[in-house]
Length: 547
Image 1 (cartoon, rainbow, N blue to C red):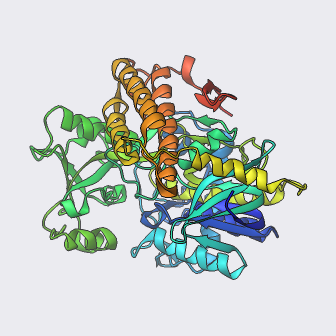
Image 2: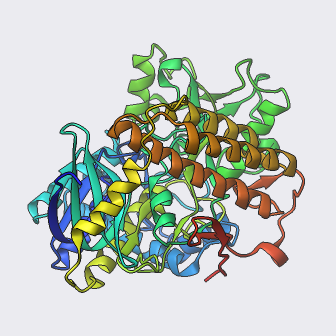
């Protein structure tokens, strides 16, 4: 085995987004030595808003109201322990961020809050110049100040596993062309969600399906994988802004959705409130129905009418307005066109209210973890999730450190290196990137917004064919290509869980809609569909009750 440098730390945090930084700060504040390792910052810099029921916009709001909204918006499938933790933890997260100097805009000594879809009251915190980016900058500065060691440009290749305990991670530095091993007494997995597993997606390119693939490989259970949220209003035109999600907060502020006839069609689906007070899963279905039934624009979109907003209100969305104008479109006079695109995963790694996965040494937070959102996620809750459960996982890891027995680190590390080099294939005829594209188109076609048995079974067979090709014929001549083949393994495993769970759940609920089973069936399906792997690497059902 090539010589691999090693470092020791109490807590290793994998991921450089909001969940990762919150986990690192929380663990360090517990007194643990903490190392972060990540390749890039994922989707966090693009966060628009963050829910917190601080009742500055409406005195009637409270953690209890927030709890009720989440359970209703999640169609009852939420883990109540996690919902309660989020409802109360979001308030504390706002206090902590404000104490770090995060500049939430204030009016008359009260933080301004926007009204996002699915929320009874305005509770979204925001920063006009870029919520995610600025919160991330403050957390990163604080992490550095308190002594968190930060390793950037590191691809997480595998988790180090010592006799069933997760004891660190194998990292690959693409710039230097070297492996390193981060040996730890607890690991927090915060590397994001499903990534670009669908052809239409808002995920940045650096987010893959690694968190799910790694967790499954090392003994964790995954739940609710059938619930993939499609952001209802993602920009298609102008082309230069393609993939940019338009804020549902803008709809709350008065923007309209129009079909090709100029009709505000949302009032047909949501008669009292139109574009407001409807959670994202329902809105996405409404938009897609307009398109599918021929009432969309010629490019299979609807119009996101920004021109009806007062100029001052529209200009408060600085990033979106700037990007549209840079693309040659002034949203004051010309509206963008939008349609749904895959945006987030409600499911993920099964955790408890400390972020523990049930695997010794392994914790998870943010979109890597599942259970809190149920069958659909409220707008603004993605950010709240990362902040609250990142912190819970960090504290859980710091308080649950494994003992530090003498380990045969060379053998542990060699097993993870083999996970990479075992993909070597100098004569393969298929490129991993081409197979990934095939997976994306298959998933959109067979397990998109609308699903039925015939398409799902066709999707299962298609994934089996792609997996056979990947295993036998993926070209992998050097370490970078071997790692891409490993990423493909994680992608295929994640896609299979989505497809299998979607076929198993013979009902429609939230972000999972079956044409052949259009009704919600609480008698049979008020539970989590779960999976784990057996010793041979096959999938085993591991359903879980609602807690």
